[in-house]
Image 1 (tube, rainbow, N blue to C red):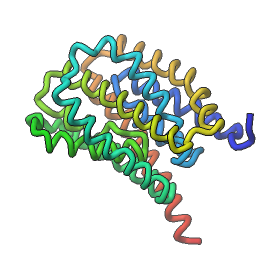
Image 2 (image 1 turned 120 degrees about the horizontal axis):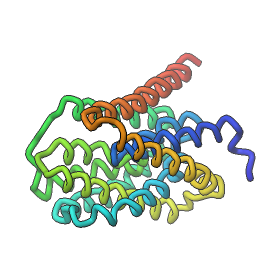
Image 3 (image 1 turned 90 degrees about the vertical axis):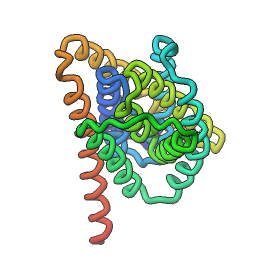
Image 4 (image 1 turned 180 degrees about the vertical axis):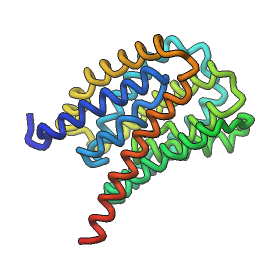
Amino acid sequence: MFDVVDARQLAMILMAGVFGGFVRGYSGFGFALASMPVLTLALSPSVAVPAVFPLEFAIGLLTLPVERTHVDLGVLKWLALGAVVGTPLGMTVLALVPAEIMRLVLGLAVAVAVVRAWRGETTAMAQSRAKLTSIGFLSGCLNGGTAMSGPPVIVSLLSSNMPVLEARATLIAFIAMSAGFGMLLSASHGGYSREIWWISLAMAPAAALGCGLGVLAFKHVPKRFYHPASLSLLAAAMSLAIVTASLAVLHKLTL
């Protein structure tokens, strides 16, 4: 054990795992979207981002076998190409930009996804290679900088005219792939210290508990509440990230 993580930080790490897991178990996506705003209340993004990758990757691997027959490989490969280019750029930004700014970017990224999804915007699925690659690139930048590759792809796929099963399965595959790639890049640059692995391990049972509760809620809560409830959970995470980051920035400006 090491002294970097104290009791307050441990409580926030466990809370992030439960909250992220619950959102993921209920909605089918959103572990990093929900957990990162809570996690960065206690840890810097440079520590929190690599800590989330293994859990996001593991959740995807456990979910994907059930969904694999619905994955649209034609869409996925171009999204993946953009993400491969964008993820290293996001990691470079993460190393250069102050933690408070990254928290603010993280919150705003969630806000865009939530607002557009809440409005129920529906568009024809972008089938051109250039458009899909650009969506993947933006997602990769967010993946490397915040561990949240989801917002651009969530908005593009779930608000498109793709069949629901295909959109959801392709999203699950893309997020798992992005997390795995982010984890490999972080590891290749020495991004995994004992502290970060411990944080991931500490979050794992909390995330599993949250996922179980989320799945239970999905089974028992009337399906008409699914859309507003999922977006409300993500909106809560977004609001927390934006408020705390803004206060931190204002505090620095007044010093």
